[in-house]
Structures are given as structure tokens and as C-alpha cells.
Image (cartoon, rainbow, N blue to C red; front, top):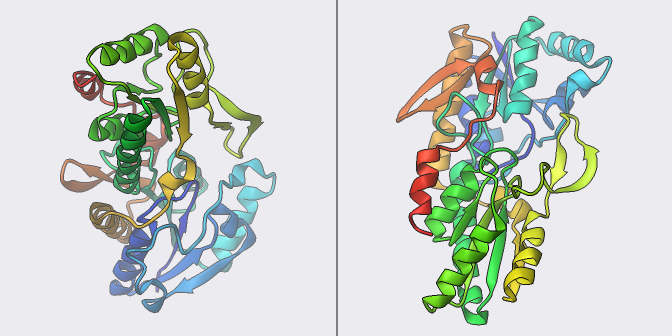
Length: 342
């Protein structure tokens, strides 16, 4: 009997549980055992696994987060990491690993394949920035959350005649800021792919004031930066296990600059981890289910070092190497479309 290990790594998002449920149900239907690896790659390093059954995944499709836990663990940063992984794969007699996450988590899966440990990936990131797939688990739910937040900010901004700067997740790609800004009717959208100009922002605010609009909403991705500086705004100089600094605070920088230049009362709102939480949308649950099933099919067919992906309305697969090679930038045609509305 084949044994499949499944894990979720990196930042969490709604609908991971829907994908885990799909992996378990499809695997059991094929006669495989499924072992849940706790807390991402850390669980495989420490041998922290548990057998998953139908009861394990009953009633979890609507639950946010991940029943397996997660962490930003990079086993290749530990001298004995690869060895520990190999030992525990043999100890639990795993025939394959299904990893759910973004480029960091799936990058580890790709390296394990090179070591001879079969693994496949499932795209899971609210940033929606993985190459080779049109969609990643968690994005639609996060998009709904952020759009709702922008809707709420509109009412208070209008009441107080303020400029509101809302900071949205997106380190290197502005998919979430762009689409939530478009859906929420933001007056300015700032993304990492395009350096912004303070004069342009203030001009837009002034134009709205002249038309009787005494408030403005600015949607900004956390990784956006002005033309005047070459680096992103960070919270800490320290980096995580994958070499990423913690971004945060660009909204406060922008708010302060706008107020200084225009004299208009300006407030910053950082949505932070609210974007990762809560109940997944129906669409997210469906896509997570389809991607989870596809991942098991890849294992069943011996198609390792691949990632389940979405291409149009179809579920397909791409090499993990392609998926993690670079960040998927926003569609600039879509960005130009959004600019028509501000």
C-alpha cells in the first residue's frame, strides 16, 4: 500500500483544509494511506506525523487555516536537514509527499525531488504570484476580505473627509492590491511592479476635491515603493528561513507624505493577518478541492517534481522548477484597465 505524506508550509490561507480533505479522500479511494505532516517541513524534520482518515477531514471544508499547522521552516538551512528528511521519509515509509504552499515551500519540494524523494506541489498563496498557474489557493478568499475592508473604509473616509491608505499583502507582486482595489473602487492603486510618484498621487486627490469628492482611498501593496527610494519599507532588518525581510509600514510612510504635501487629514490602515483568516469562499473551496485531487493523481501516475495548476478553467500540471523560478507579476493590461477608474 502506498503512503502519501501531506503538508502545508509558509503563510496560511483559507481553503487549505479543503485541499487536505481532497487529498485524503482521493488517496483513500485509490487505496493509499495518508499521513499528515505537522507544521510544514518542520514536522518532517522532527518526525511529527499523524495518520489521516475520513474522520480526520470530516467537516473541515469550510474551516479556515490548516488542521496540520504550518511554519516557515527551510530544512536546507540546517546542516542535518536533508539527512533528517531522508531518515523520516524512510521511517514512515512515505512513497511521496504533497506540499501545499508558495514558492518557498514548493522550492523545498523541488530540491527533495533532486535528492530522490518524490514530491508534488499544490499552489497555495494569497499573493497569487506562483508562475505556471492562473490561480493559487487562498487568493479568492483574501480578495473578498480585502474588498470588504475597502468597502468599510469608504464609509468612514467619506464621513470624516479623509484620505485613507490601506496596506495590503503582496511582497513582490500586486495581484491582491490590484484586484481588491479595482473591486473596491479605490482611487489610487500602488503595486510593487510599478514605482509610484507622490506628485501623481497628490494630483489625483486634488482632482477629486475639485469635483466635490472630499475623501480618497489608496490601495497599496506592502512591497510597493516610491521612485525616490530603491528599497522596500521593512519592519525588521532580520530575515526568515528563506531570506525574506518582514515588510510593513509603507502605508504610514505614504499617509505622512500625503498629509504633509496636501494638508488633508490622512490615515493608514494595515490589514495584516486579517487577510489570511476566516472562512474560505465557495470558489476557493472548489478550486482547492480540484487541485488536491489533481495532486494525488500526479502521485498515482508517477508524475513527480510537478505542481498541480489552473490554466483557464482546466486543472493541469507544470514542473515545480518552472513554478518557483520567478515571481508571477501582475498583468499590466489589467493594471492599465484599473487606471481608467482613477
